[in-house]
Image (tube, rainbow, N blue to C red; front, side, top):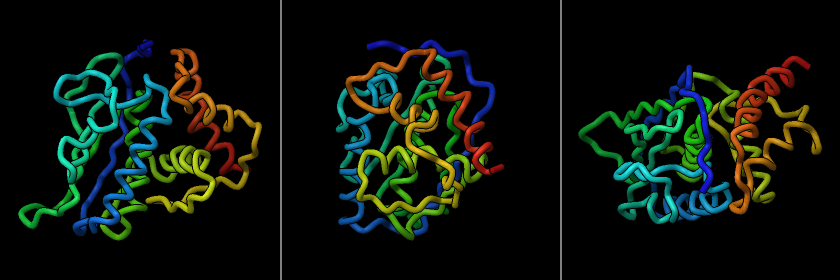
Amino acid sequence: MTLLSLPACTADVNYTVTQKATVPPERWATFVLAITGVFWQLPVNLRPCNPVNGLRMERSSELFPDPEMFLFSGMNGGDFTYQSVLITRSRSDSTDGKLDVIAPHGQPVDLFTRLALVLLYNHGEGCFEITSSAGAASWSLPVRWLCRHDATLKLSSPASFRDDNVFKGTADELMLTMMSGAERVVTTQEWLLINEFEYRLYGLRCSL
């Protein structure tokens, strides 16, 4: 597997996930199926890490050490980051249900985190409140990535965003292609390009 050679991130994106209610079993099951599909559709070197050993996950089952527990971690500038993300189906009455997720901007784990949060928001409808320190721009790319892989999806996002100026064949579409397919190996140059243009393209669309 080819590792991405990246500089340590200079900025983090903070996501706040507040679990308001326990996710019904049937909705949790659809989330498990959806995030499993995402795992296998991502290039290998964009997949998350196992928080126990710090190694890139090779099987989607590693995301669920328990059937009702979703757990992953990631890399920061090529080094294992020990912060893990843990979401459970059941909301504990002993806590406020609030989870602060700090994802290193510019690292693959940030993309996977956003994909997972969009799916949680939709499959656990009404069970989670999710915000991002980067605002609406955080959700444009993951929503379009998910819809690109399943045209039947009708997804909502934690914050509304503008995508009315996105056309097939643009640089924006090229980014989605570079981040798709288990057979792909994303090069360092490609990943740096994706990170440089994502928010710039979103800002350009909003200005038109």
